[in-house]
Image 1 (tube, rainbow, N blue to C red):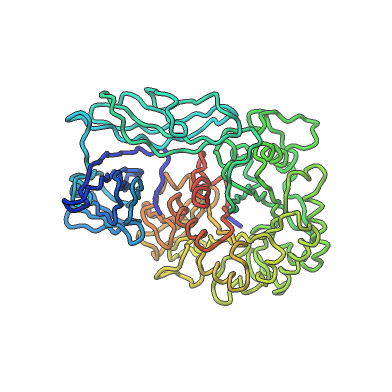
Image 2: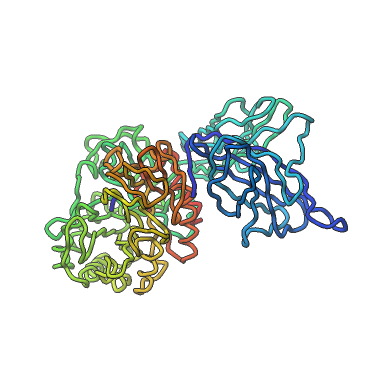
Length: 607
């Protein structure tokens, strides 16, 4: 394993309040009140993302809606979602989809678009009436919504919040800070530290601007925060939300177990796969013993806030994972063996599956860290097929290995496997008995990414994690939907399949065509490896400017990248739920932003 719309950290939000009463009935009927509000949620220089919210503020149901507005010359919509958007000159019109036109009293719906240019909408009409109900003071508009707060410095009893400023034609005076919908403070700056909180507790924060006339603007988006400490488990739902934590990430990437706490990710996941143990001489073994159980952590680096001592029996990642589980008892940790580099040992392991399973349990249950791990994950790339090397163990080897592991570990341990997502006819899924092995496993991590990339240096450019097929896809069956369908057809229950998400992008250079399918000259530059870059870097260095097959792509200069964003992850999570899948997993934590926005998208999408 290697590792709908653009999200930009610290974006400035331009929110234009366009509220009004709109007549939606005949004169004999009571008019239905409704508002249309526009937000410029993201701006990456070469383009932007806009969002409209239509809300029924009346007492009767709205059966359909149409929002129309003018953009100045040079500003236009390039793609849209959740509405049918058309234009005539500079006039743009958005009509509801068949499934989101009805709005009960108090209900709202949003639709969005990607655009180019710098203009703002004007002359808004909702169902033919005005979108704007007017301000409370003639000639003085209410302020826009501030940016959604970002949380940092989370402790047992406090959290620091920061947000991007609101705008107002007469000036913003201050901001109300709302905790769970109730005002807890009014500040003149764009940050606030909330104290006196309860440890191990979930809170939701938003902010609202006030102008010099004391008019309040729309409330910002909300950020969910869970304070550290406590033993109350957060509600994670019935879906698996699993992330890989890489053993080597503590070095060059400087990513540690504590980052799961400070980013807010620990409260939003259910499982962690610790990657990777090695497979040598047909046996499981710890790979980097220093990172795993010897590296000393200072108090500020440690999950518990206590420094390691030279003579304590367990240090390193394993001890940090132990501390994490003490703070978040709902999290289960699995030790993952293999991966792209270490899969060469599985062929020998399969020759004596029982001995292999026994060696794995001895590692997982080592008395020094037996309380840390709740199961084992096998990442064999690929049984009876070619990965880094080619394996000829036969189609039954994988099933036999899984059977031996279940027998050795018993019913109280989790036993899982990361598997190929090659849905092509005669491809890697067909090379091993994944259907027969499913009975021994709790779930499969289906690696629905790395389909396409600069390992084909000439292209054609294509998204490395397509959810579905699309016209011009370079290889039939290389998409998530085909892989999941093939595994289901082989008898794997839907609930035992997790959809894979990459927290990174794959890219080419020497590309002149923005749309997928262009030629290239090689791999785009990457921080750690050419052709690969973390999402947290790409979201700023090469913002997405298009979507295809449920994932995003970006053309910046001569480079072309594809990767998932919070918006495309939301779409994939909806698809996963509709398919009845057991949840989702991702590779890997350090590719996310410091505030865990991709983990948040998975959590929100599956909750």
